Length: 455
Image: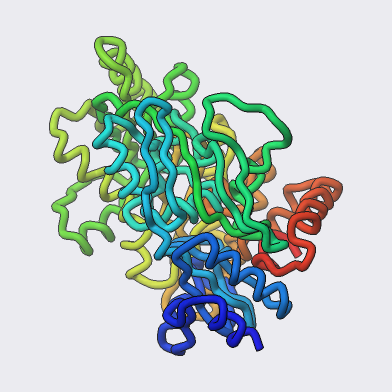
């Protein structure tokens, strides 16, 4: 029996079967993504313990669903019937920070902000910063190729992963990638693991590259009457040749929800707020901030300014990070994650508005607007099945619109369960077949997070 095999291979406290505890590990934060009951939750502390779990599951033909903090928004970490949930939050050591070579070696359960704080003590910076950075883990960030607020200038998680240790779908413990600044030996198998959502193996250690600490930032805020005007400002910033360190959109519904929850004293007389940041040093940075300000004004901003109050600027960005959980307190929220070319941002935002009206669905908006990654939040009353059906239809229409405009179904949340149909639309059937071939080669037993990304 599988449980006997797990208990024989692991310390007894690693295997959890208490129904109340197991229930907490059944799903991530994706609204309405299906999940089932696992046979057990295993909380390993070492790579060898992970390997023992995978080998036991192979022997007993049992699925392995790996999860970090459970903050995902696509259902990628949702349990399948009778699976083992492999919860890696206890593997949370920062093993090494090398200031000369500028890399860090961490276990998958390290929280993003904890790594950033540890690096800062060495004058270094780990740039990827999803809005969930105070609680999401590096392993989960790697599994979904998470982005964040500053990725418009500094890139996403994939751009910072040098190498990793994994347990493969065949139960082998191997290292992929490198620690050197350069290296082109063989296929980029480490890169293949980034964004694989636990379907190819279990990541047990990650080596990430670091940058020097970010220069001080100037914050530029703009208020707009319409979300389309704010979208025009985003396109104008790109057309002006500016590369901000952040360019975030948040609408009034989200700011009101955050203020009602956290009592931050936000008082914004605008339907939509754009928050830009420039971290270029010196006079050039001052000029870029003024140029961004002009872009906002020319696009129809009702008010704009380069902030002279750092506390106020930080509060607005904190509100942006809190927008999703604040809206979630009001009722079920189905979160989109489409990404379109920057020139298409105004059109995509207009289509989102039209889709909300057509399906009688309230849609609030937050976005990593600077790189076209939009997060419409589809809000429904609790226990209203008709509203749920309308929201799901709107969700599908938003995906269709993004693809029509040359975009992609997910910019950073991953495919998981919610975007499987969208991925099938986006990818050529031959390319989808290539994905399946890779999956079959690296996970011949089909035990690694089955039924996710594609069937």
